[in-house]
Length: 398
Image 1: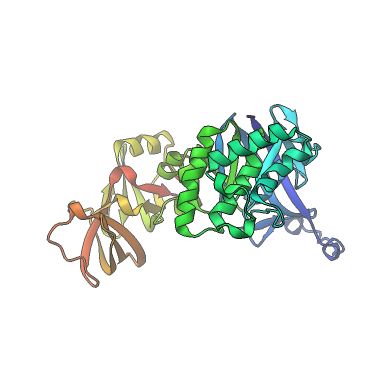
Image 2: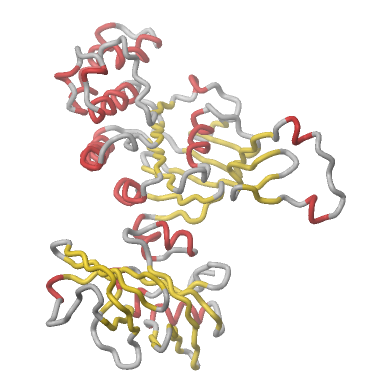
């Protein structure tokens, strides 16, 4: 149980020696930071994490999510003490941790590759951190048996890791971490080596585990489904910077920018070139020949920011697109692929020169041809349209 606070955290990996020897160019443009492989590069080196600020509450489950190379694992390793912090401050329960050794931080970490000792049994693997603390044999047995029961691995305690499945090994790795009763439990993509079915099972196990142990979780993943199902709050990262922090519902319903809009949600949001139209206090978006009025809530948000008419990117999630006829608000498209998913049909549609996905509930189907090559007309749910400016920022939240 602990609060964790990260203030203006920055991680810089120094340039290679030959890079440092290169002469600086004197003009201002060359002296400014530039980007290589989507990360900032300065005279000091590559900035892997930049100005990271986050306050984690006691017992909160925080998920850091983003594409490979975005800095999420580096951030986790700085909390663990496995990476030095270049600048900024890390606090656990109001105690500054920048220079505290990993073993003295009272944290535990579960790695992607399990990191079990192959020559030890499951019991011996779980006992190991407790023996390092010189606990009594009775106390060790009690804690190991309790953790094994919570994780459902009691029957495997005398087996070696090689005799276990991937999901069972990951349970052992989690068990080894929780027997210590750490203040903070760090998990670095723990399910990425499992197949889809096992990942689903282990997600449920982690949710149950969270309910049974009193600790603060920081979980890293590149899988937005894991982030949405596990996290109390999600921290979405890109190129070493935080893009948005919020509950799963907040980041889904109110994406702050195009990156968040495209990253969160499966299938991902459809995006179209359009124009924001304003008539008095009323806003609409024009996409192709369709003019779609925005809801009262979105009108109020745009008015509060005094947003002016401008070229925009219009976003609509597949489940927020309707085939219901609305005069003057219909967009035409051609069905490329029609996928029957049971409760719904996923239509892959070519519209406005872009590939779009439309989810149609089977209960809403009418006598309509939705086969490949069919011409269809669709519109957007006015309360669920998102409008982004040329810089990719959501105009409702600027």
